[in-house]
Length: 618
Image (tube, rainbow, N blue to C red):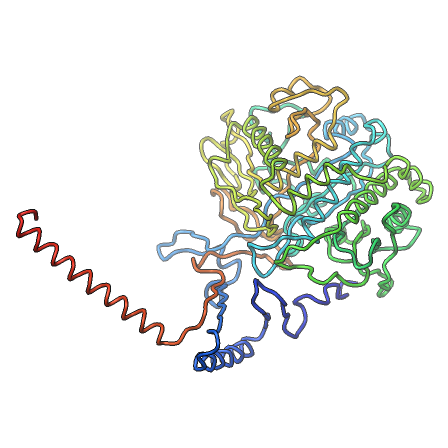
């Protein structure tokens, strides 16, 4: 099913992709250099004709300068660039940032206790989505029906599940987790990194250390110096039984209808998930199975984090996709233009996801979708918190610097400063999410989620020496984007509620809570720390050993299947320039006027100087 064309209106077609309104300029993307050169020649000739007829307005020319370095340059070469004096000076950075994941049913402290008591690990049902978008312009990727709608839907689902009593959640046969993955528009960077680590990660010998040197207790967080991971919490996630991915539910192909993509086989967990979703509809949202026919016995799946899970587990673990389209993406999948979304469909999708997750976690292995769905539908109400919906919509679609995000981001940064003693927000510039928000993944560096380790007074992207831990100040640090820190804080608020509410201004106020690793959130309430960051970096790359931030190398284990996207900084003039094409008369007039002004200035200066000299003032 991998060959199935989902984005039929996208730029994968052979003919030009015409954009009806690109900032008021009709624009066509043409792959062929010869064709584009030919069209440019015709356009230039037409511009001359226009100028010769004085009654017509001058032509408008738009120049797209996306210089990517010398013709033979590629990602490995620009990452390994050396100046003429032999100094390593990379000319690009990999795309990436921080993904966020969370558990909804048990804290990591409780999971470790169960393993120590030989109670075993429960299976995990995961809800996942992408949180990035792309378009022709990287500074204009609003992600209306992708990132923004996806994040809003999954956060609402998390809040609904978090309202289920804690004891009820802990009593389910399986655990529920969430994954918000970055860089999915560029080869599934975040989900491939996460599931690859869950399945295969091995820290180098003797490189597993306390994430904060002075906190070396049995239940304190552990990290890996090489390859660097600021947290090894993902190793305690548990065995994933199946995944439900959500995508493009803000603009529906059919009004009031969501579609389930995946197995319909009643004998496997993927088919069970499909049946659970089909039975989880609301009064306003109907759920239908996709009409796309299976190819070679395998149902084609839209590209989502589920794709990565299937690849990384060799097909041993699968799942389904809940989407707003049936057999093809809704037109305008990746666009620079913000589009209005249907909040009722997003709310309905959140309810459906929450019910399906509870039902899937309730089932003890019988695959009884009817009984599980009946149980879940009784637990999850048919509507979402309208105040939360309004606030999140404002933040995700209109103002990325909204008060809600700023409050959660502020507390998350304060928690990190309290944990490590470093205020990274004053050390590195953080790009705002924007107004309106922009969901382009951007490059991975110290200001956008590259994890670092502080050894002594120096920061490293990866560390192989033996000095870590000799100072109490040694620690792993990470400066997340505002989006990532806000998602993490909100997930903790929704999923980590305690029986007894404790107010706080920082995590220091939560230190006496023994039930879990308690932290403070933007709601100024102590909660269990259920959410974690995870490095979203191309699996073919790793931070260079014993070097500072911004240095990356191709991994020795690279299998050559990764896209390895990087963004260069060869030219300072990269971007788009739009201007009117004027004839040489205008230029001559401007030149003549400039010469006249220059002569006038010289004459005036000479006259004034002589006058001052005659009066002995100069």
